[in-house]
Amino acid sequence: MKMLRVIPISRGINKENLSYFTGSEVKIGSVVKVPLRKKTIPAIVMSAEEVADVKDEIKNAPFETKKVEKIKSSPLLLPEFMEAVAESAVYFAGTSGSIIHSVVPKSIIDESEKIKVQIQNLRNSRAHEKLVVQSDDEERYATYKSLIREEFAKGYSVFFCLPTIQDIKKAHEKLSKGIEQYTFVLHSLLNAKEQIELWNKASTEEHPSLIISTGAFLGIPRNDIGTIIVDKENTRSYKNQTRPFIDIRIFAEILAKKIKAKIIFGDLLLRTETVWRQTESEIFEVAPLKFRSLTTASFKLIDMKEALPEDVDRSKDGKEPKFRLFSPEFLSLVQQNRDNDENLFIFVARRGLFPSTVCADCGNLVKCHTCGAPTVLHKASTENFFLCHRCGEHRSAMEKCDKCQSWRLGAFGIGIEGVEDELKKRFPDIKIFKIDSDSASTHKKALDIVAKFYTSPGSVLLGTEMALLYLKEMVANTAVVSIDSFFSIPDFRVNEKVMNILLKIRAMTSRIFLVQTRDINQKILRYSTQGNLADFYRDEIKERETLAYPPFSVPIKITLQGDKKTVLAGMEQMQKEMAPYEVDIFPAFIPINKGKFSMHGLIKIKRNEWVDNDLLHKLNSLPPQYTINVDPESLL
Image (cartoon, rainbow, N blue to C red; front, side, top):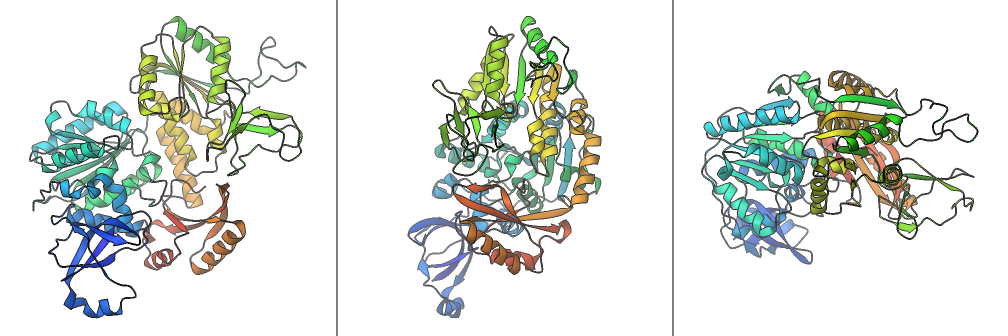
């Protein structure tokens, strides 16, 4: 009889391991099905001992030890992978089961008996290296192609990790030529049968292979992987937005260390903390980092606050110009684009007609009744409506002010629907396409819209940040109608976000790149239009050091939701329990979510002091209603 310690693979279990017994022989790393509460869940065996050797432990246990229900005898995952899981669980103050849930597809765990395991004893003999590359897409991919061929020649496979399916498809087109039979593409749009089939092929192919995938497939048990490439490194999609708050970039680095492989981070604009690590000689260059982004396009930065000529768009009193959606330069660009049969992409930061609605009498902001977030005015065929982009609340725009009952509600800001309406009025003969989460609700719809845009001379494509995922080919002209709203977000990464968006748009432009702003003194706008990465990095790292933000600290965000009185008391108690560690308590940026009040606690610990075992013990001792996010993308 064996006593097994297993890692439960489920999001909602706060135990690192559980104990069960079985009369069968079980190998470490095997998948078993175990009873838990009223359901059966998958788990991975981490140890197996004779019952006689742990008799006292079983006798004194505060629970009844149950029997394993089903066993897959052959190991599913590499031992080094399991070590990386355990180390990541510590780093993110989570459990190994929740980490596995994020880096091994559910289909592979659930159908483990269909997995063909071929784990050999071969192991990389070279030292683990950490490298970076910062350059435009074409130059980076040329570097990657050369590196992949070199690795193949040495008998090593390459795992190419990307954040989105669109990025994966682009990488496959650029990297697989000549090695198609040894290239495997995996992502979440594949059904369970396809995932299992490709997992088996990728893990059992004897020739060195190129695996292009999201981080969810990092568990493929190939022990000849010599390099893990994490491209588009400056992308928030790598960080889980729900429990467990694992960062695939950090997990990939830990895994590379365990399997003694190279890890390469690449992007047009690397994260500030990654560049800092390179300057501190923690990470080394594949080639000298490019701090000047070159382009053939000419750029124009337009100050929308400048006074207009006497005959243009004046208010009735003639003293102040009215709010302008478009500058004369922008309108001229639209006209030229049509006349020259080119194509024009127009970036708009927000969905809807207007992002904000304010009472003209009392100044009250119209908010969602469910979660308290500002509502966005949208248009409809019958009547306009307010939509909450956070929780989805939908209600008629025909309402009075909640505070003073006034009908005088004024809409402000720039939304994609408002831009579309104004363009149609001024240019009724121009074909206009649009990509945002409202108009392109599926992957296929977005692809169809982009395809029609590229094949329609003189057309215009309106898009939010979502559109950047689908624009794979160069665009003759681009314009940024609104970007200023991002600067009002109190997020320490917002400057980097804006810089990244503008650099991406600039890089896809072949002729004219135009940016409108009502905040002309924002240095980020000048840096991005000029491709000046060096000065951006110097300013950003200086500000982060002053405020003790990453890379100079590891922030740990602790969140509690519930009724306001209970949350306030709970956060005060948590603050005491965390002593002597200092916790700053503050309301969430959107304090009400689905009727629940939300507060955050923030601990900043010096980067070289994490993992702190005492603090980790305190965090793991918190009740499950507290959510813990180590190194979050946002503190809001």
